[in-house]
Image (cartoon, rainbow, N blue to C red; front, side):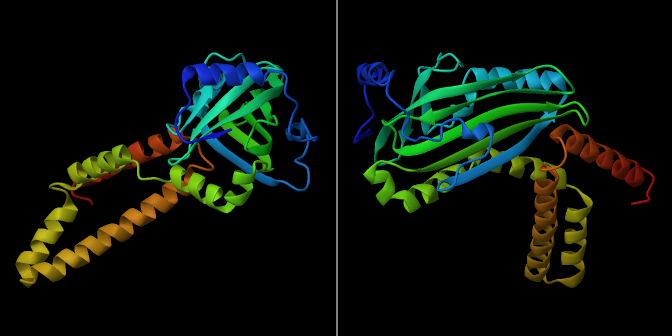
Length: 271
């Protein structure tokens, strides 16, 4: 259901009531537990959340309470919907110029607490009152062999509503764009941390010395800025790559250890 403005609470309640017994909009229900069927676009994303059973429990609790829908532009209704097979929910999406209400129903729930690995999650499928047709599975997994906790999303879908079919390429682009919009909090935090770290650091002292010695402040400024940009780019690329293979806690500890080693070397004039 597409709307030109945000639906009222009464309209949302009516929508939820009217979609409780609607059929699925596709015939391959439950295939996220086996293998996505042909004829759909498949999306599979996996990220390491951390380590240990405590991280697993926190992540599983967040999933039970639909926290993965706290994205700003999408909302899951009702907020207290039970995570159980047969539970029907509505996904309210803000497309900036339009709103849409989409009906989904939980197909199966995953609860594996025995053995070396633990998994919790569920999959829901679209009903005929959804802009797209398909299924999505969300799982939290703890692997005891390496102690890592992962969040895994597997989905297969294709447009169903004529607006979705017409604007499918634009919709895919917009979703990716919304996911990559500038996070000003991250921007300002990173700027503050790097600014304070570099203030009075050897890099700044070296730039001051070069400017005083060469008497060419603009050339020194440009060269120093380029050097910092390249070093920062290397750090971002390496950090992003490591985040796919190592828990965030390990990366933080390694960075902290590196800072301590460098500080000791500077203290004794060895760096």
